[in-house]
Image 1 (cartoon, helix red, strand yellow):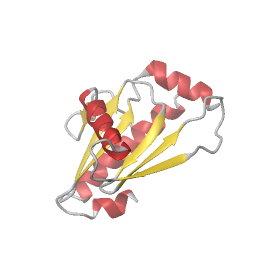
Image 2 (tube, one colour):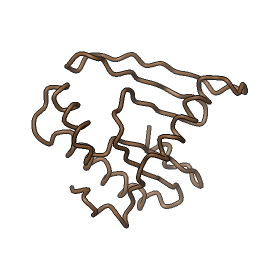
Image 3 (tube, helix red, strand yellow):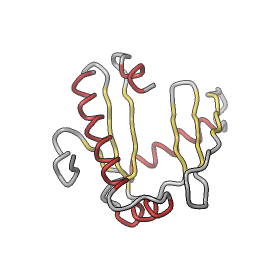
Length: 140
């Protein structure tokens, strides 16, 4: 899905992730899903490095990577036409999670627009990671 999007020239893709340096949230996530040590920290760091490498490969498509230190309660994919929200289960473990899709409508009050605004606000609380600052504590 990402690579097909990255082939669109002159577009921007914003990816917002939990900051791997957010030790409190990473600790909860690790415990909740039955992993040990730096499992999620390493997984997120690896993904950040992959995205930075993809930016170099798809130069005509802008990939912006952000990290935040807030606790994540859902995963969101926002495209030009729809938003998909995946809620995380409360209990420990990796159970199937529901995915809800909301189409983009012309109404100001539609859920797609609310999700879009939420993402914009989240970016305000986030730090952009790029090839110039990736070595500031983000390790592969």
